[in-house]
Length: 403
Image 1 (tube, one colour):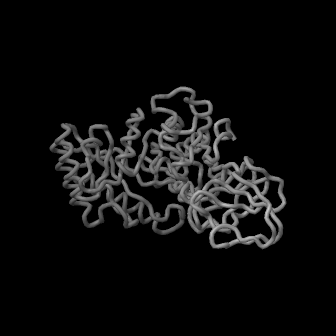
Image 2 (cartoon, rainbow, N blue to C red):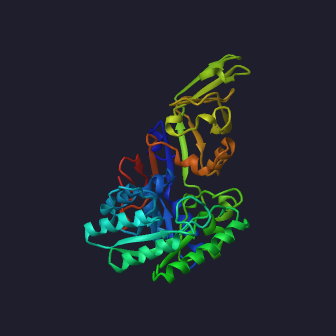
Image 3 (cartoon, one colour):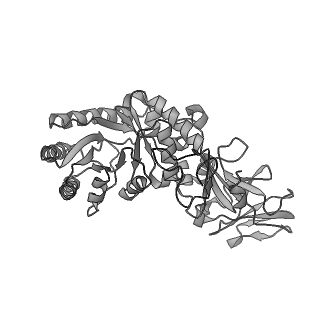
């Protein structure tokens, strides 16, 4: 606990040293490739600005986000490092992004046309990364449409409207390095780069590797790697290995203070629908977090929390703002701490434990923690650095950091 978190009914404590350590590990694994720390979705729920600053301090030289609004928020915070925003839809206000020196991705001719039109308005060339679909079948140009996309980009580059600085793609099975699609996608990507070069393009960053490929597939590193979940100390999947085995340390600990404690007799139904009933006289403890805060409703009778030194399963239905834990005869009182998940060093469940219990992935567990749960940052820099402020507006405070 931190001085700030002790006064809060619930909070997510983010250890920025854990972010720095994990990014340093990733940058070392990347070898000669540069590292792009992906900070989309508010830093996977950890806080985009604070984690971006920590990642840049630890060796990342690029930042990646999904949408332009996220990239603009980084610029508004004073962060000047290269930023790529890759999810662009028709009709967006691209001129603002170009003026802010934000790199944009293009997978189709309409995207290049809109980027070029915005570049004319701003009077400066747009920095573009062309995306090729090598097998994920999500974003990216198909193999059939890729040559035409490259030719169009080359023509716009010759007109001074765009600068093609990157070619990129994304894996489908990177967390299974032995899967045949991994080798196939690396080959298709290399072929796509050759097509781009034949069209006269000379992208200086070729990037394919996500967290798992950064850690497990050195031949996929090319010029730049794009780790996401591993920036925050979490493993990209069970086949990739545990955080400790990968040299990562989870950064988020989700805690709350018990709002109410009461004794009830045996046979008491608990919470909506009475999906849980006490088997004996017991103490029920009320935790002031619910599905409005990102605690999945499906966690009822399934996920565990640490309270009074023991891991105990949530009792009954998770409500919008609260859930109940049956602590038996443990001596607890209102105000005592409960840990939903953390690094696991003190016996608490981890985000991966929650994911396994709920049939999902740790990405979803941390990313869904809502905005009304304050983020409290520990091990923040004492002063702002050139990467930007140490923490976002509205955070509950920064231990060893900015007020």
